[in-house]
Amino acid sequence: MKKRILSGMRPTGKLHLGHLHGALTNWKRLQEEYECFYFIADWHALTSEYSNTGIIKDSIDDIIIDWVSVGLDPEISTFFIQSSIKEHAELHLIFSMITPLPWLERNPTYKEQLKELTQKDLYTYGFLGYPVLQAADILMYKANGVPVGEDQAPHVELTREIARRFNHIYQKEVFPLPDVLLAPTSKILGIDRRKMSKSYDNAIFLTDSDKEIKHKTSQMITDPQRARKTDPGNPDICNVFSFHEIYTPKETVMQINTDCRTAAIGCVDCKKIMSQNLCAALSPIREKRNALESDTDQVKDIIARGNQKAGRIAKMTMAEVREAVKI
Ligand code: TRP
Ligand code: SF4
Image (cartoon, rainbow, N blue to C red):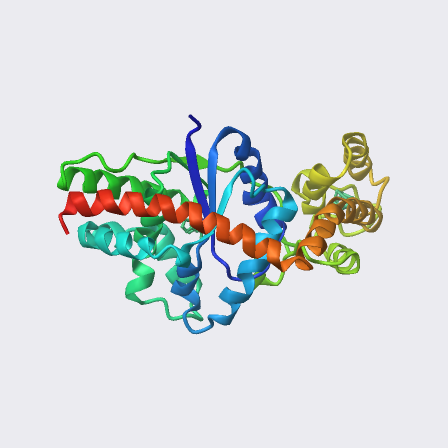
């Protein structure tokens, strides 16, 4: 029997290269080894987008299409929508009764987001309980592992504590303790060298056209010390070079490495080569996306089948939970 893993994404906009290399490539790789559940965390999106819900609905199909386009396989993995499985809300409520407030208040992701996302009012009950809902997502399917980036590791840790506490209070081993499966960190940054994010306006989206990609890559900040073409550059600190390492054939990467250090290549030309390779790599993804966009029935069917499978498991887990809690 394969071990089970589960991970989710909040539908708050189109996917970009940060998602591709930070999560999706890893999810794709894990499909062979594990029984995978990948879902759209639309209730989680609501914690920050409660007054801007249009974006949530609009992104859901788009993200499912992106998943399939990059090679996640709905015949192997299960894709579902969180809000379609109402049991998540019930389990969240039960967990909220047994989760000590200090566990949530000291959550580093919570503290950081409150500080960073100042343009939104996040002092809500729901936002504080974000990781409790995440624990419900994970434990509902009794996942053994949760592939996430470093920022989400505290949430999985909290999930383990909630599982342990539930099993202890109700004297029944209902939930296994899930492990964090830390995704290999992706080196690629946004075009301004900050973390790639839609809200920083520095992202290259999976849906960008060749023209947009060409323009965005031409704007990329390179080695900041390299002011003139005649100055030698340092690829180790250049974001364009990190892109080359992903998209450019190895020999060319080695050549660029030397040419950059000896000022034999200028950044404009270097970016052009990278941009062409990036466009070539995204082109099959775009082709698949175009095909799926014109076949909305297929997308609906993928979601319906995933929801059905997830729903069956959720029902069984909740039966066990209600029996343990005796309510
Ligand atoms: N909080 C996750 C994120 O922002 C999304 C998420 C919700 C999730 N529920 C989950 C991830 C359960 C893994 C498992 O990326
Ligand atoms: Fe970066 Fe290429 Fe310029 Fe070197 S030549 S600094 S690798 S963009």
